[in-house]
Image 1 (tube, chains in turn purple, brown):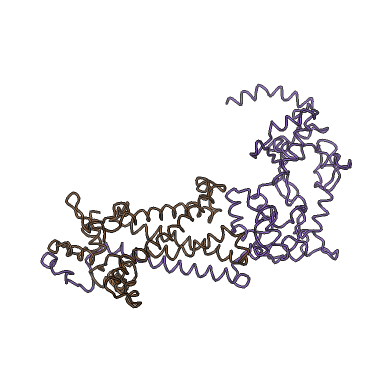
Image 2 (tube, chains in turn red, cyan; image 1 turned 135 degrees about the horizontal axis):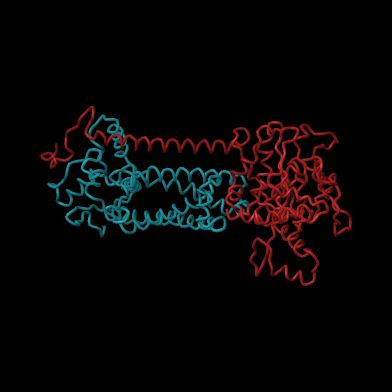
Length: 361
Length: 271
């Protein structure tokens, strides 16, 4: 009720702003004022395919990611007027209007796309031919949505999530213009650790790798489920940020994260000759020997592929069944016996000890 | 031999000696470490379940729960070694010394003495198990008459003796995996992982359903048996669970005339 009256009071003011096309969201200033419409939570339509599309932009979320310094038209290049026709899909490899500071050229994600194309996830194989089921192979937006910064601060040796006012004040003593200090602080510190939570990365990979149809088409094991059964997977599920997710083991340390290679490729982190080094990378198992690589991570308990694990599991299951069924049956019968304490088909009325004889029965 | 009286009287009731303070303290250390291990281990084993994270966070989260788990595991392994030494000392004092005094210290006699210990399974246990099934299936009206240690208690006693040698070394291997990789292939850790998680499940399910039935859920024990605290059994419990031993202790105490008849399936209990 309170909000309603308040809304009524400010509505005339609001409509004046709208009519004058005044930019309300100053932080997202752009020449077309896209947020005039896209700030509305209900902005949506059903497209030609009958799919529901939501066009609402949460400016708070948008403002916490690296793309906040871009204008909408940097990526949505085909839109030059409002109202506009259905927009084309964004091509992440196009140049945006931002200048990449190290080389003074316009920024583009083209090099990432190139790396991805040479990885196991590329659509084209080594002979230049399109792979079977090429449509299954991921593009940028299959794994990435609008990224968010995850800044950290360190003070007196203690790391915490969030922006450190202490540190940023030091940047700002020289870099006074605009939001330069904030932007660079978040840009750098988000990359000092994992920009995405491990749980999120596993979800990203699971989108395809846990889909039974997909696995069948590409003849792949259920690596997500088997990962979730490992100590690593379980600690991640309980919120640990110190145990590895998919990326940590499937990308060579220091290599571009988009270069995930098949274990048959000699340079791959999971190639049998490299697994030892992968385990020892990043101080994870730094004291381990090469032999630690013999540990099988993605165990499916398949009799053919993992006989040791299969038979051990069967053994333990059998042992458990025998012990528990024996005792639980016994407990059940014992409780039942209490209903008819003296009943028996054959009665034995001999007392156990002679002195009890006179007093028993 | 023992500073404990086999029968004590309190408020006009008889109580029968079972466990010394030393043994009761060992039991407290055992169950405390096992409970801690279960509380810090099972949320991890079932990390995907909704109850896992709250319990794990309560136990210190991913930062401290593993430390508690390893500390409790170390205590449990220490207790295992301690109890084995304790048993060997007792065996020497109560059995080997006797043989020595009587000048009968031959290998055959040592083996005989070994099997005469109260917690070692024997022929009477087999007879009691068969007798129990006859009783449970209504073929006889008399429950088995157990000696000082019934076969169920022996099973309870030896469960840690089979569980800890499987769980303990596997846990140590997973803990010191990096160091171990210098002397053993990595696949040993796969085996250790299965041994640790699956034997733990068996142990916890056994404790929760079977052992806790014996000492908590059984109608005459509910909510809890007190022998682990007092070291003494009530006369009813003694008659119900150790009738053969009850008769023996009563005769030894010169109370032959006051021996009470055997119970039938929990009769004479106030439940």
